Image (cartoon, rainbow, N blue to C red; front, side, top):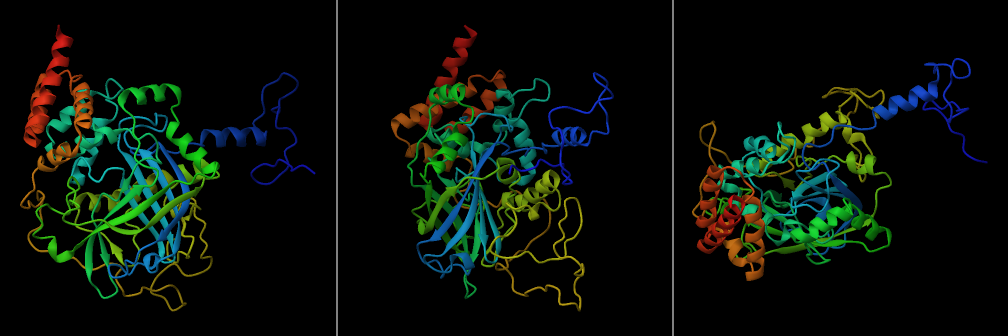
Length: 486
């Protein structure tokens, strides 16, 4: 027997092909419940898209511990070799809207939700170890410069480079973005990074600053500008299609997970500010230590419910893991959760993809749009004498010592802290062919800027990073601009 189509209230639908009318050929009747219900729901099928990371893909899988890290953290999901934890990973581009193309030159989001037995742990990062800015107060302005211009309605190279010309701290990430890894061939063929600095705390109370690295086991594969343009013309959904089809045919993508660990006491005298998101910790200083492997093995059943409504927040920590003084991280501790409250409502954590799976959320949050209120008749205040949930009196992470005056402070400068040194180091790590492509990509972008003053402001950054880098780029930009003016 076939299933019976019903309205949302469960009543059977007699006719789903023809609207009710006032007589044959007459006007449609507002009393037609199925018609009104379908049109009203259709008008509300979309929710506000993310301002950044709007276009994304996701998959489920697991994280497995392969190496003992218990001397460094008491996090339960890392407490034994062989332990597996279910995860959901969302990949994304950053600047484009929901209907944009996959194969574009843009950082990629790498947002991972661990469904641990002590609550959900969200690790929100990118496919690059650094970012364009180091202070969250600059974030809205930076994103506005990269998005559509309010007058022309499209992305303007003048806006992009005008902002960067006033933000030399962006040079390190610019060198990443316009290098060979600026356009990944697929989500499977790129690395992921926690990017920010976080804190691990061991059972004995010892604290470490930590950075996460996810090294793709499929190998790094990227597209040059020509390949990307061709792919965009053929398939706007190339990255989504590749991820979905690979998992469907049983080719499960995986990453080997490493961390860099810095004893807390070493941070103050380290040559770079370890909490500056525009800087890396060179591996020679803090080598990679293997932790485990990440495997994706199941596609979502419904992209909207499980990818579009997936909500990640870097303030979702578990015991043994906490934040650092990284200013960008501190801003995101608020901004991410607040974005989801706006997009999905205050009860977005009760949605299936966001709810804890290995434990149960027990708190006094009630009501609001979309409330399920599983607590039923239980009291909604604390403390109480009705056996409600109580605090543990054990901090998730270690306290951080602070001192000095309140106020708006520039980032603390360490011995090697400038905006150019690490960008130059990255350039010098590249092969000659990689440098050629980097120069060509940058020159093509800067050469399209219409304002001379913007070009004149930004080119000295590259000279400061590396003499060869600056000389070659300036010559390439001048050649493009002279040709355009000829």
